[in-house]
Amino acid sequence: MNQAELRRFGFLTLPSYSMIACANAIEALRMANRVVGQAAYAWQVVTLDGHPAAASNGLMLTPCAMLSAADRFDIVFVVGGVNVRNAVDRNVTAALRRLAHDGVALGGLCTGAFALAEAKLLGGYRCAIHWENLQAIREEFPAIDFVDDFFCIDRDRITCTGGVAPLDLMLAVIQARFGRRVAGQVSAQFLVERGRQADERQPRQGGVTPATPRRLAEAMRLMEDSIETPRQTNDIARAVHISTRQLERLFRAHLGVSPAAYSAALRLDRARALLRQTALPVTDIGIACGFHSASHFSTAFRTRFGHAPRNERSPAHHSARETAHV
Image (cartoon, rainbow, N blue to C red; front, side, top):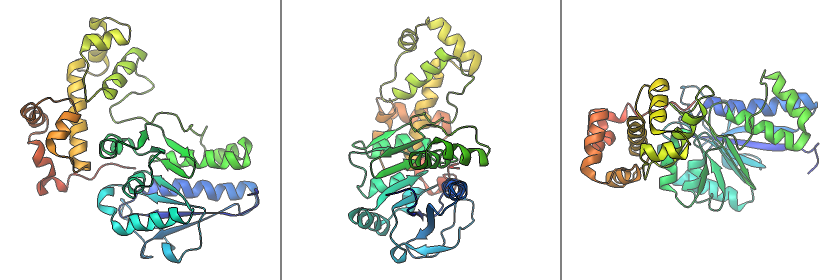
């Protein structure tokens, strides 16, 4: 395929999709056309029925076409957002399987990778998804290699996190086709200093920031990576090559809590996310988050959140479950 050939991108928008993720991807393609002075890319917003889907902000993107009636795409991105589980049904997975059978490359933006996983189209691939859904989807699809990266390009599967990360993804796609200079010009038009690389680790809520001391950052990541089998404070201290007392001082000075309290909060926050985002049994979630008995998990959860784990899935809490995917 030469540079002059038009490449067609479809954006399958699910109910409550992330508009910022979708818009960032489309705008990068638009600007690439302007920079190279030719129609290198075309794009179309689609749904299964042809009616525009409402994004999580209540707005809709038009024009919108019916997926089955659209021209053949080179790649179709599933654009997810909040409550993605409720947005993916048999019709969605069947449509994605048909596209895969026809040789169309598939991608996911924000939480769109969930739809591809549900359709059993990610086996043997490395994939990216918004950090808020990362641990839940790892528990639900343990055979799929979900990574912490901003985006992941693995053969004919291109998956990306949310927010402005799709701009980084498209800059990488544009650079692969037209080179660094064109990608840099697109970046400059959007006042973006540089496109983040695929293997850069996405930040998480309450997590490591550029201002976090290195030893503390290492300790926090170790705790994140060992939630199912929590490590003792002295073990963490040894792993980051400082004393236990120094580690405790770092946590209290920068986070206002002890290492043990931070670890407990991390595990309970993870448990709450799994309760909201998966159908896993409560007992399994407790075990996955490092609690060795149902009673211990229930007591700790009730102390932190004011209700039992099972009530996190009750109708009274449904209205509070909209997560801040951007």
